Image 1: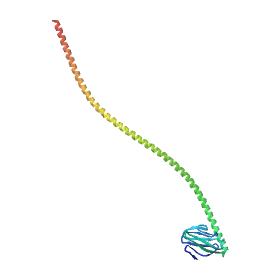
Image 2 (image 1 turned 180 degrees about the horizontal axis):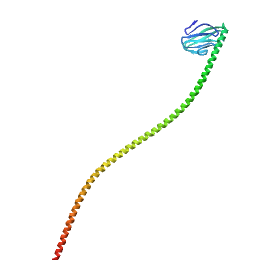
Image 3 (image 1 turned 60 degrees about the horizontal axis):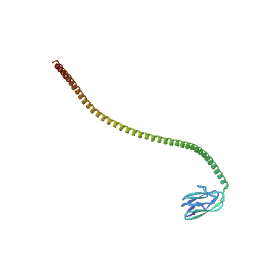
Image 4 (image 1 turned 30 degrees about the vertical axis):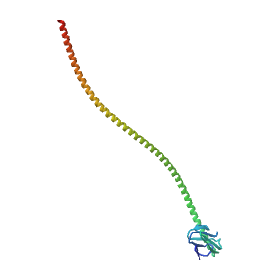
Length: 228
């Protein structure tokens, strides 16, 4: 095992098909040979944060290799020797089992992809329908806003009309009160004139009676004088 300030690798010698661990003490860019890859990223070059990672050594690796570890301020190289697989038959069996498991996982994932694809189509249709409903609701809401504004204007106009009518009624009441007052005064004047007229009629009748009496007296006197 090599202990470095930057990284720690679990072994300096491995066999084809092995998995070795590398531990980073700080974030770094790690570059492997093309015959190796990180299990976490399935890539041979990755920028990794501090932590422990697994490196898969494929059967195409054989011989000495270098693992480059770079940070912003330093660079390290780790030597790794890969020997031939001592039990290739077992590796083939393991590989077949892995391929079978991968095939099962792929089939399962294909089923999930098909399910999610159909689900996506359903959700997309629902989203389109929902969008149309939202558009319709927005249009109805806009129409309701306009109607509400019209009703507000009508209410405002009605309020103005009511106030105008109230003012007119108030003015008419004032006029009525004035007319009633004037009517009372006129009634008093009429009563006074009626009283005066009645008095005048009485006086006229008296004067007429006196006139006729006087006239009769004068006529009688005139006849009496003529007879003499």
